[in-house]
Length: 158
Image (cartoon, rainbow, N blue to C red; front, side, top):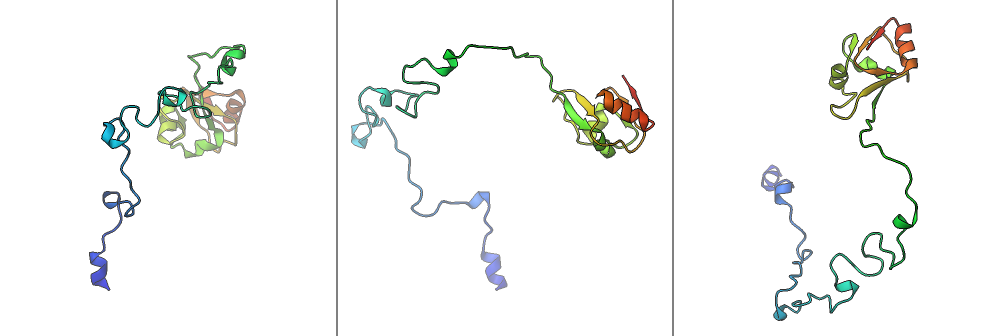
């Protein structure tokens, strides 16, 4: 029994193979008349099915509506998207228990895994309660979160 276990190799990415007969080679299109798929490569002559990037009715170009004016052009454009908008990374007050020490900075929040570098500024929200007095430096804080931190004996520095 032990001898059989030594000869059996474990399955891994290095030795995976498809089941016998399940893998067929791909069609090599446009390789001469002898292949049966030369010249027009099995697409026939002209028409939408012969064109590149267009699969005919139902599977064609994105947003193509058969010549009808596409919905993206029929509907009026509205609004504005600010390219410089920064989405804040939200941190709950209850999550501050994971931060080591009594000082809360962007670096300590990154070390605790509560925010990520380069994903926007961190902001403390008043979700939950703060268990100990902490000093918050260089992190945005909501007004209600600031009140809870100061009520717990901590302080918020700009």
